[in-house]
Length: 247
Image (spheres, rainbow, N blue to C red):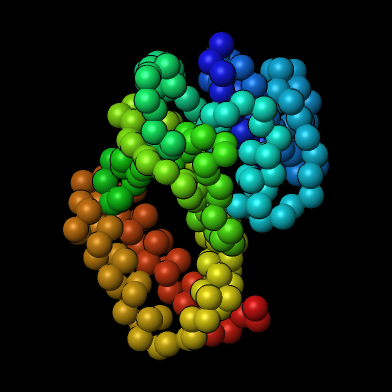
């Protein structure tokens, strides 16, 4: 097995966690930090050989950092419960870690699926995200939403994608949009960003234009149109809530 720790944070992910951990069977250590799931997530993870810890919710970035803190190996691969490591990606990670002078962190492309369909345009692919890094060099930036790893050192890019089975239904997507827009508005407020009418009016329009036109979302057909419209609405909602929701 590769001397690598994979970390996953969970909350009621029984429908995902088994397939996620099955794709990590080649990793020498898997840490699952669970938020007291009520659907058997922790039991499924333990049955797959993961080290399971229970922790109350501290926010996305803080939760992922707590999982990283429990790693015993120098290299960490952080993934979500709805993601899968493919065999080609496994081979590429192994090659990188066995190379003479690996960098301190690596961006991995993601193949994102919406309602079972791979979305190839609109900014959804390759969707690089830094997920493989040296534990002593990388931390998740403290943000309310859209958390990301910041590495103190050199970084590189892998070729093979991580498969991401996000948003299994339109209902699931809209529910998460409601949550994320509130978190994003709070983050803007804490950063000292005040409400501006022009942001609420113009930014949604440009979001749609960028996704559907400039990033070729129209090539994904009806799904591409829906995602461009809904992202524009998310942008509107974020700036509307910036002016109306308490911090």
